[in-house]
Amino acid sequence: MSDLNEIELPDGTVRKLGNVHAPLAKAWTVYGDTPNTPLVLRSEWPAIVAACMPAEQSPYLPPTHDQNGVGMCNCSATTGAMESQRMKQGLGYLKLSAGDLYNRIHVGRGDNGSLLEDGIHEASTVGVAGVAVVPYLDWQRSYAGAAADRPRFRVLEAYLCPEFDHCFSAVAAGFDLISGISWFSNYTPDSDGWLPAPRGKSGGHAIHGYKPTMRNGRYGIWHQNSWSDRWGIHGRFVIPEACYDNAIGGWWAVRSVVDEGGVVPSLKA
Image (cartoon, rainbow, N blue to C red; front, side, top):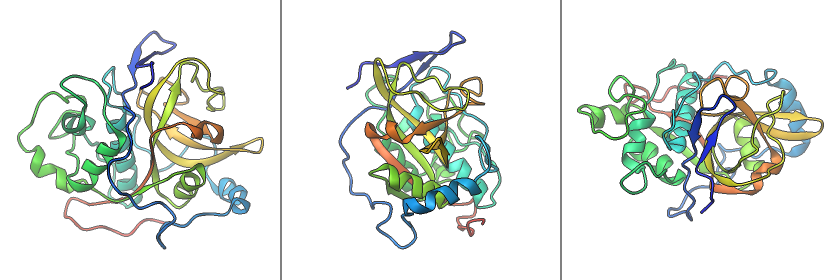
């Protein structure tokens, strides 16, 4: 296990990481192995990036989450991706409870983090309650009504992305990413939002990826962190391709979530 568990931000606040490393325990379909998960040739990447909105913008991003010192990054990333997919399906923004998910998948008895795979499996098989039923940060209690609320918000497509090419292709096709990476102590985005080359201690962190990008011939993917909008560029940043060589739990592409009536609407163009 890595030796970094929390980060002190420039404003002096402390944010936990919380993505615990472990080998995969379940069988997952790999992105690109089905007709509805197209791998994109690198020769097509420049045109894809050129067609994207500039900078960190996206019309389908939910407000930035804030773990507020709780080690539930996996749950924040998972619910953020689900919220984004709801908007892409035309369902509108509805905040989901990362605390409800963390309550069920946290490691051990305390705030010791969780496994990325457990979060995605739980969101796919059981679902996640909304904050109207379970407060976003309250992971230590069980709430009446949570079990009935969870099936209303469930992931229907989840694919493992073994390499950067899978991740890039997925966000280009409208999927959202849940990225588990080694997070280094020097990871402060530059003025363009890009992370530097890794240096120092590292730990496991998970974040929500949503859009491909390129700078000076190098590719990356825009992500939304869960440390409030005071971090990075409104809470957002770019993970360069070079930083995709240290997976902590893997990278996952998710698309389609159940709507409140159990009907899956068509994905918006």
